[in-house]
Length: 115
Length: 378
View: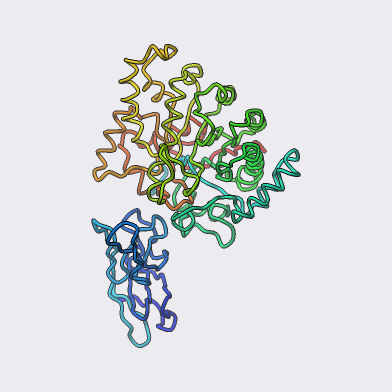
């Protein structure tokens, strides 16, 4: 089923919209021009994950040497801070617990999510 | 919840209301603390950005759930938002309020002043104006290192009706079994109040382990119970638990399972060292089982929940455990995600019965969704 989220002009880069859809609502994100849609439920404890900050994460090869990476590509849950890749819904930590994602497209100026 | 018979009352034993600003709190500073102490407190709060909490490293969103931040003021300062998120969305029936305005200050006189202000502020606001529904109960904050002030606060607020326990910080100048702290436990028992303790140091330079400071928030967070072991051991060994059989000591925000192996150790060595503490007339673990309670958040999450049940069984924890969320903090335990992790046979005890019995909360039952009677008559 296709969910009409919003007009594309209402979703500029760096913004998001939470729309009804699926079982828990759907968060639609524009990150640097690319669109993503994720279920608004954290696989950890059921928090409204799509309300969390978009940020980056860290990588490191050894102690006291952390690099900041993937800025703008990571969704952090607003409750316990779990990190998920916006594009795939996959958790940064392992073993993976992933957020369900949905295909999203633009059609006639509308952002459409297929749930 | 589909109908009244499905309703599980929940008593949340760890909720943190906050003043909107330092000024709101310091307005309640009693007259005797105005002048120099009041001025010092005001300037100290200014240095520490409003609510006097010394933030250190790494706590997510300054320690709060990001969706629990009101439009103005810190997390926990908006009564409508707390009602909506805690009482409605989370389904909590009754919340035990523990303000964290007093955070282990260097100067006991200042700490005592803040306790007095906090108790008056709580009574007026969260146990007064914001408690029309009668679902909030509070804690009498005291600074044990100024004993006269602590006893005065207990005397002043014990009859109020809305305060259901005395709250002492775990960070004091000695362990709680020492003679200098006995009058506080004795006064609490005399007034029929449990004594609770809750971590009150934010991470950073204030978190001192037995071997020094932690480097990371993640290093600090799993170690809260370092502050609780010494007080439990001391209260048992020094005989305070034995002298005050009605004393109940609540350990808030330490989780549950850590007590089990500690109780084994205490009993094991009692057989060797019992003559050092002949005033104990039963194994130490029995004092713990009968007189110590723990709140569940942050609940341990082993890969197999059954392993947690084994610890709970070994502790004989049926009467020891009370549910808590720690709202509005980031490590909040959501009732729906947490209550199902308890063994079914003790779930109602943990969800509300143990707390209802400890704190004298009437009107809760699994067959009724009635709100509680108001905390204070009229």
